[in-house]
Length: 348
Ligand code: APR
Image (cartoon, rainbow, N blue to C red; front, top):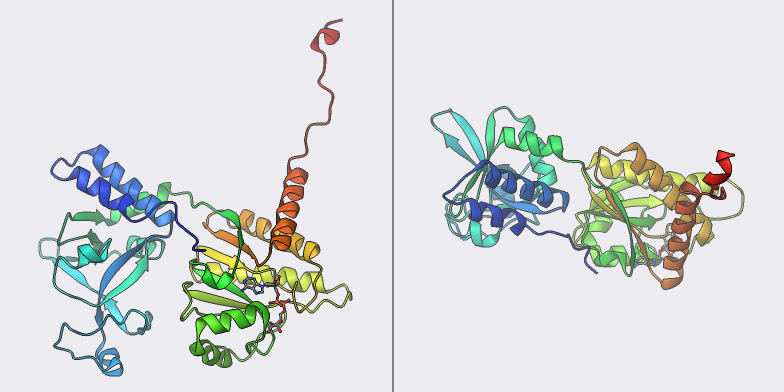
């Protein structure tokens, strides 16, 4: 099951087309609201990139050809490219370029493209004084999103955080990160660990070896490789022996995974029911810990929008999570047990 956004990128294209030729304050506000909704629903721009010579050599590309395959899956965003810009002679400043679709990017000269989520690029552009803004769809119905407009979008934006339940296989989820219930050696096991390694492919084994293991309660991150998720957060739950310290280790798994997600600008994360399989942690107690730590973390990080999905592999586990959540909600909003006061009596 794909974790489907409520809006897609047309939430930007439609108001831009509607404003064509009669830009008014209202039409600009509609465009900015569209961009804000697209950002909060994890939509992405297709941004043209300029590969470094080192990356071109390593990928075996022909520098003078436009026929090179799109290197999206192969490039390292930290080192292999810079984002293409358009220079504004009048102001002597640069504009970044972004497309909302393959169709829009296909209307002009071919370029290697990297997909960048709006929640990633907009705060960065807002912080770069040298860049004037982003030209959206320059070859089609273009819109110049100035830095001041981006600052306004970010200022009014109140990032939504929500908790979702999902019944199914976590490896199919299309969210920013999925969490793996791993072992301390970070070698593929059975259960969800085995499923994630199988779905992510062999490159995950190599990445896990380079991490050098992970202590119980801690969390480490790798790319998602063949998964739809961009990242995998590997955390090691406690083996349940009834010794008493397992609950705090399990709480650390959720806390460290959530903190790692924020550190990597992840805005949607899916958890399996950590430790409730091979590690025998009682499911209801584990679900209580998962929901309690997550609710506290969202409260403490209310400035950061994060969608948290609890992915249950079977209906039994889903029922447990939903019962735990409804009990938590009742405890937070206890019904008013006072008898309604008869106001007439009070008059005497
Ligand atoms: N998607 C979502 N949840 C899954 C999936 C899947 N594809 N496969 C299993 N699960 C569920 C199980 O039903 C259980 O509720 O994940 C939960 C955790 O079970 P395990 O995967 O057994 O994890 P855990 O109990 O933490 O034990 C970890 O098992 O696989 C080894 O290498 C792993 O040593 C580690 C240990």
